[in-house]
Amino acid sequence: MHPEISALPSRLFYDSRLKDGPDMDSKQHAVWHDSGKYRPYMFFDIARGREQSGASHSVFNMDEVDAALQLVCGLCRDFPGLSWNQKIGIITPYKQQLRKLVEAFRQFIGPTATDAIEFNTVDGFQGQEKEVIIFSCVRAGDSGVGFLADRRRMNVGLTRARKSMFVLGNAQKLRVSPLWRELIDETDARSLVIKTKLPLFGRTLQRGMKLDNLLDTVASQPAQIADGEGDRSEFTMETLDEVELSRFNQAMLSKEPPVSTSKPEADDRREPEAVGTCNSSSRSLHPAMREAARKRLRDAKGDQEAHQSSAVPE
Picture 1 (cartoon, one colour):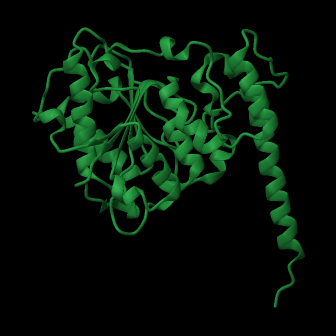
Picture 2 (cartoon, helix red, strand yellow; picture 1 turned 45 degrees about the vertical axis):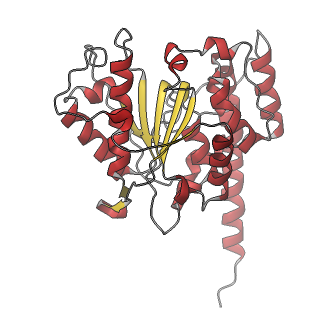
């Protein structure tokens, strides 16, 4: 991934010890970065966004839905010579927000919009990457940020983009979380927090917009949606121990990364992928790291079961 994207997760989650591969700034440079409107990393402050409750107490934010639409349309219209098909992913921690996003894009762009763009929850997007990621935070109420403050989920959400990471959120409301406050303050110090007024870029959307450079003919690939909004066991991999961090950095800085002796699993769709996906050379680490994660999870469960069996009822 672009170093401007990896810098924050590296500092927030790994004490700045996570290293980029050689020349990643030039390798992950994109033509839209030069415009100034679409940098490698940006936080769009949707200050007027209103959090609402939907089905199963999941929440949604229609202003962030509109902002995501306008951001995608802006990229397509400002760079008509680029094909955006399968280049963009839109993720959110909340299933109700996911439904609203899918409905809006189908309504304004057409039914094939969901073939051209990957929509998913943060949980469901594990192990995947796109050139551009739009992360809708949703939370804009007075009841806190919920499991959006989970550092593992935050880590996953912020490390899925190769070239540009666009975060949509209410900066004031998110600052109640110490981790999000740190992220927003550092982003603001880099002049990358954009005070946003809708419509984004002053463009009003119309139904049935024709975006040929987005809606190229593609085979439909249904997304693997996570079953729930907060299965913390899925995020075990997102915290690297000292040995794993050392091996990852060695792989990033060498031409021939260490090869794992573990056999890959037949189906790892539900396994979280390390932040090390910023360079394809790190993929050889995943099987061993997955096994280490499983062992920690088994040990934790064994300790819990032993504790429960030794408890004396009152």
